[in-house]
Length: 636
Image (cartoon, rainbow, N blue to C red; front, side, top):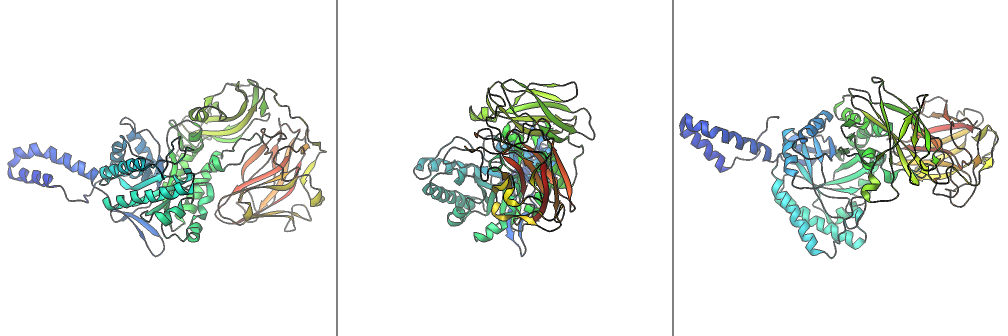
């Protein structure tokens, strides 16, 4: 434990003990000294650390007891138990974390704060405010307009915790409410909540002038209410995932807000903001994309923004359910690549052991009958560990309780004679998320994801697409744009910031022209799909092409500067639509080179009877505008 400095005067009772010790001689001293040591230790834990936030000439600054404090935070979802909490905080130190955030107080909060103080880690202590309607955060409902008794209970509960913990050495500040306005229906209720929030925050400020007050909202949804009704807030907390945080300084200026912000939750792109694959499943970011969001995102979205005090990266927990696999950087006792990315960005130290690297995980025949055995393609390696434990699991989100929809369950699998794997489809019908778990002996755990649609009809597709003659060009230089088989009409995400020029003559791969794509934004994400027919996402329209016989999908690409990251593929329309894409594949994030390079997607095992989305591209904001070029896109 680091040496503690007292920041409050010792109570009179302690001074009395010291006085009696001095007057009563050695024998009395021996009796009193242990009690004095105990009192000193208690005060070192419970004496407050004064936290200040000040605006310097160039940026906002946070300090603790007069010393600069560079926030390196994570959200904390670990069990708070006496037999395990020390291990959790040792790992936090290993990560380089100096602050954690939770969402509410309870009987275990004292243990949490005491342990945090022991390891010199600060706590943004949550004070939970009830949501107005059930949603992602739970099934609670509360009316801030009519329920005066309920508001009184919440107010008294919050103030109880403030009085209990305001002088604790580990306290960084108060986090009052989490995404409450997002989860309130009417405008009247939103305003009523905002006024109630000010009542709570203003009282906290009276009771504890030594710690700043935060509140967390989803993106900037709550800002206009905070600005008008909650002047007592010191810091605006923003829960945002992916690359959208690059836009926050501009949002502050646009809304004329002169306060600092903290990313109270930050991590890879979430399920709510993810595109769907050809079966209709939300596409979870790959392990590489999650790592890149941290390694590249924290310097660009946190450290480079003078209004930003830091981030709490989501989430340090041990859960094994669907949400945990998506966003936790540990699963059980195993470390995800995401864990080591946080350690690297907070300490500069790289992983002591390389995580398994999954190059490909696909199910070529992704529409099957219940309990069919289905071949999968899994390519994985580990530089240090040849003995990688492989297992397969599934998640089914279409029916059941909240807990049942979040559960991840084991899937029957077998290793074939050629070293490949097959899995057995679940016995129920519906859309399933399939996971490949690849764990080495460290243990590091890498996970890949794909979808499987189970139906009694199996792979029947109804009307196939128009029969195509191979090679089949999505784009080449001898076909006028008006006669292209697929039209780039499927716009997604922040499409207003994107332009694509189909007649670019700037160094095409094949003369006279190529495709130029420019994206002027620095954050958010964009998707573009080449469709047949144009502007069709499935629905009741037939179309597409029967590409049966094609062995590979190829295209040429280059970046204007090199280093641009883009994901390419084909197939997007899910099985929930009448006319869907019968196959879907993606490259994962490609890092483009400045010179032209050809890329190939294998079509082995793909059902190509109706491909309505002939080409797709997805990319996130990369901290600066980007431009890249495409040419000779074809199936052959």
